[in-house]
Amino acid sequence: MVPSRLIIVSLNLLLILISHAIAQQSLLYSCLNDEGNYTTNSTYKTNLNTLLSSLPSKINTNSAFYSSSNGQNPNKAYATGLCRGDVDTSVCRSCLNNSTNLLPQRCPNQKGAVGWYDECTLRYSSRSLHGIKRTDPAFAIWDTRNVSSDIDAFNNGVETLLEDLRTRAVEGDSLRKFAAGNADAPNNFETIYAVEQCSPDLSDVDCSDCLVDAIGRLTGSFKGKRAVRLAMPSCTVAYALDRFYDVSAESPPPPSYPPPPPIISTQPSTTNVTSDNNGNICFTVNFGQLSGPQYYT
Ligand SMILES: *[C@@H]1O[C@H](CO)[C@@H](O)[C@H](O)[C@H]1NC(C)=O
Ligand SMILES: *[C@@H]1O[C@H](CO)[C@@H](O)[C@H](O)[C@H]1NC(C)=O
Ligand SMILES: *[C@@H]1O[C@H](CO)[C@@H](O)[C@H](O)[C@H]1NC(C)=O
Ligand SMILES: *[C@@H]1O[C@H](CO)[C@@H](O)[C@H](O)[C@H]1NC(C)=O
Ligand SMILES: *[C@@H]1O[C@H](CO)[C@@H](O)[C@H](O)[C@H]1NC(C)=O
Ligand SMILES: *[C@@H]1O[C@H](CO)[C@@H](O)[C@H](O)[C@H]1NC(C)=O
Image: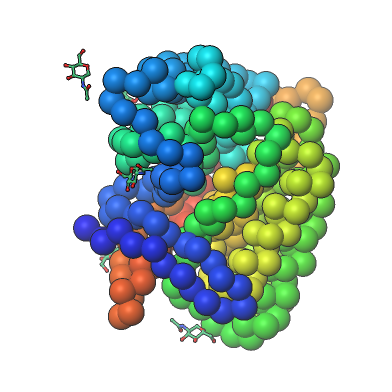
């Protein structure tokens, strides 16, 4: 097991990476200490449990986002669940089900918490979350390998793709602010695949600001890495040299859509948690290949 500790990586920016990371669990999470604690038999806990237990079932084919609250002040609990825009409804529900079970176990005292899997983000709080941008804490997971040649050219290619996807994600609506796309890596014969997503309750401006922040940290602190995922409460950005998302999510489906073929595998990634010589926690992500198309309906 990796020790829990706070890590600051100082390059151009201070990036608060990790407060808790536990091997064999791919849930990244942070217990938010700025809202105070609750006790075992409190009304807040009851309200939160009720809210979280129903949350996964509220995801439907129209929206991979759900935002709700339960109870009366001062014990009212708020929660949001959001799945990556290419993930289908059953995977989304399963991902949020896992999060709603695990996150309160990982944060048994704090009223507020945020947890990320590759495919979904769960947040809860004693304060309203709806439409409020939050960029802290930021977590990063990266492949520790560098690209083989010309890191500057590669980084420019990543930046150009991420800027393009930012514009497209911001153009989304109140149910979905997500963009996926790819571009040729300028330094070699590989392709860069990327996704960006905001919590869709954010305004266009807040979504854009959140993504600008995430892209800046990502390109500033992880130059030349083969894969990076940066997660913040209100938005996420990821790229890799393997296609880690469903390619059909790259553009909207045509009006009359054929029935989707069977899904063969939708669990492409595995995470390795190790420590470097300075005791910093490093996440190695193995972005595998999706073996069958998957449709977001
Ligand atoms: C809340 O609980 C956490 C974890 O048990 C503890 O570290 C922290 O001091 C508590 N905060 C308050 C305000 O009691
Ligand atoms: C919580 O409630 C249960 C059942 O009423 C009781 O047995 C337990 O002692 C209570 N725990 C606390 C911390 O008050
Ligand atoms: C949820 O957890 C189960 C059991 O650990 C696992 O098999 C499943 O893949 C998880 N779902 C997602 C979407 O991660
Ligand atoms: C949700 O997760 C719990 C605990 O991991 C599991 O027992 C339950 O079967 C899951 N429900 C669904 C619908 O996946
Ligand atoms: C990756 O590149 C960085 C910056 O050029 C260098 O400091 C680091 O040692 C390289 N890491 C590996 C694993 O090659
Ligand atoms: C994780 O690390 C171990 C030990 O270094 C290695 O054997 C294993 O292949 C790694 N797994 C992945 C998915 O990278």
